[in-house]
Image 1 (tube, rainbow over the protein chains, first blue to last red):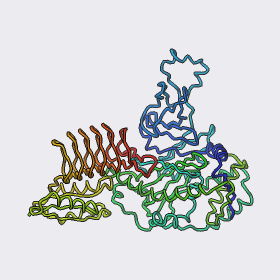
Image 2 (image 1 turned 90 degrees about the vertical axis):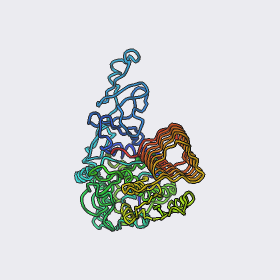
Image 3 (image 1 turned 135 degrees about the horizontal axis):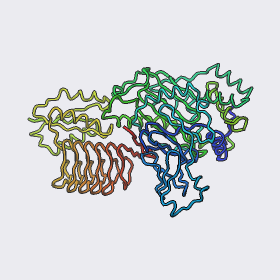
Length: 382
Length: 208
């Protein structure tokens, strides 16, 4: 079938700006791991769609704020993560768990009128913790998170992420591709046998197939369209899911496996796709997990923040750092294969490029693009 | 005749054998190479079972893989058996008087270790590397060929410094870190930080 996605959806900055308002701001966004925020004053900073966000632990309570000091717009926390009070290093303003401000030398130097002083606080964002995963929502009135992911997906994310260890390795890849190419790639089960023939496909034999039920659903969607917001939300929930994906070619067997509490006991590749931009997988039957968070930066730029962790350690072992580093470098091979092809596509796209042709096995991506274009064309709002 | 087991893999093993031949009197010391398979992981340690310990010494020659952990595991196994593992200083290396150097260190040809420095056990200093005065290098580090470490710097255990790295005077590189991107380091680097030329941003480990 002929895709309706215009090349502008991938390359046009005005389109990207509209997408940010219509799609990302109303939705819950992954921001980091709870294990990174496990002590008082631990924090994470991220820039989500141009908005700097800090998540901070206040004596066990997690709060999300805009990471901008109300005085002179200096970022309050500068590092991507760490342990430090919520305190602006420029003029010493500090902030409590409600975002209220303590201003040193306030009476002597600032003399704010009462009504102005009442407005001086941090802009707070809604925050939800799902197992070990921390999400924020930038909307004034957030959608209930269950409406975005569905109860079953939230339960699966909770159960699996509670198996995570507290030692995490992470980095960021600066990708030169549109973020949608990542979710399309992740929902395309046919590419691993070609693109990852010498890497991932050696361990896991992904087999793409056509779901006649899925194709029939797509046809109905093409004919009837999305009539209302409830239907749109229901369809959006169907884009998220997770659990067992494909059996492993051979049972996982690495020395460190004896040191961790494995998630479940099945020799499967586990896969969780949380729409719009979070991917979690366990390529070794629940002994370790990779988390890929695709943060849109511009039409042609996506930061790919990657976390890797094992299942919980039974007890500390000497080589845990080496295990994490080795896994990260192993995952790097697969990620670079994906990134390379997405960057090739991005470079190829131009305003007059013809639309792509999707096969029936790609019914999920086809449904997703119908949903997405209806949103962008204003047929419904989130 | 006493013997020395030279245990390792690939080019490091060949290089260590060549170096020991150039510094030892082969009429009084027999070199016995033992090639191990690093891919075997812990199973590689089983190859040590058949070694003759009586009056023997040993040297482990493995690269920086697994954050230098595989070399450390092999060395630890040999140490537990009470086998002596004297350091190897290749011809042409200049080691100042009073420099402390522990077991299984390997100082490459042309390297310069200046006054007051201390090199931890199992650390490899590559050919032509320069270690300034008062430097501490922890155990099981890998300092590649030609690396320069400024005076007073502290290099943590199991650190790897790759080709082209220059560590500024007094800087600290935390343990289990890798700097494999050419250039001068003028800020301290936290433990478990991995800076690779292939990665735009560092890889870091958080938590424990």
